[in-house]
Length: 152
Image (tube, rainbow, N blue to C red):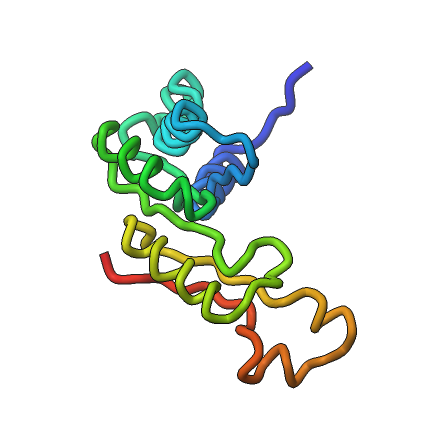
């Protein structure tokens, strides 16, 4: 038995999809995995459902595709081949623990942007947070959690 929702609820759910970064952070990602992710980002809702809601011509996509820095080029290439302009986001700075040297983290950001990422999700050093070293988290030793959008 299906769930019946109002048109207003459906509209809000469709709007929510446009705020999602469709993400893969698997250590075994391949180009074909990234291609599938990009296809799903371009077509996040089944066409028959969009037609039933008269939303099939609205171009509903996810907000971004998020991948590891080493896969940014794959995502850019797949999205370009699909003819869409969905932004590519990347986690950086030693995700998920953030326990790499500051110079390494900054270089990882630079390379991801150079490869085509237009949004970078930066992580903090979790050890500093878990041990209450707040000055290290916000000072010269570490970056606060921050989302950086780069110009296209």
